Length: 325
Image (cartoon, rainbow, N blue to C red; front, side):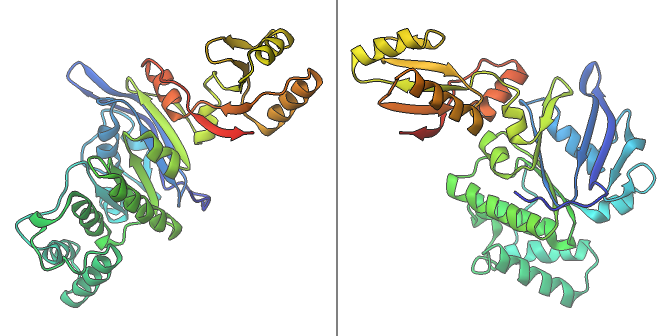
């Protein structure tokens, strides 16, 4: 993740509203995305993520709030063409034409951006090389793997050198290796000062890439902040002590009466927010109580817990983030 920012946000929107008939999709959404960062919008299917992207990228019009949208310093309502010149969009569904080659797809985008023939060929060559598509450039795009098509899709988006890029679920359906390759590409873009607005269904993707995350639910922002700030919203963190000797377990359970017992696994759970200061306090407390466990693990809520709690879905078990022996 990057910490590069400027004084003026790349994206600022207030009071976004959008309905389709009786269905309210966005109900007063406020968003601010600092320049040169990754902002991730999370939400269940149908939460309005794609609708938000379409509004911010000028593809559809909001019912309210359009006058309060600024993209790249331009007011979307009064200067939509300036906004379009500043952005690039890679949607859920590939814009790649499978009937022509990868190179021809790139040159077509260069024509759409009114580049000269020499500029278009140079840009296409550079981007195909950057996205490791040079060897496949002369082959029909229909022969490309899913990961190659997504890389070509993003390369086509970059032909106009946009400083703000909307990526709507860019890694859906990709295998783990292709997903990680795409993550590397996104990091490179942001290191060059590009701002990325990312929607994703993969919580680990948002955790890995995003400087800030907003959770959209029922048309509203349920919470937003850094991944760590969101995780601290959710209770359930604890330190787990596991014993192999039943006698030591019983002795510890008597000494630590506030801990939650699990007699089957011979383990005790002590509530904790997982911070270094609190962990040190717990270790000091264990020493003073004469408790020595065979294994100590720190469990902290992850983005899965945050997502499920904020969207009303049943929680999943916490995952171990760190083990101290």
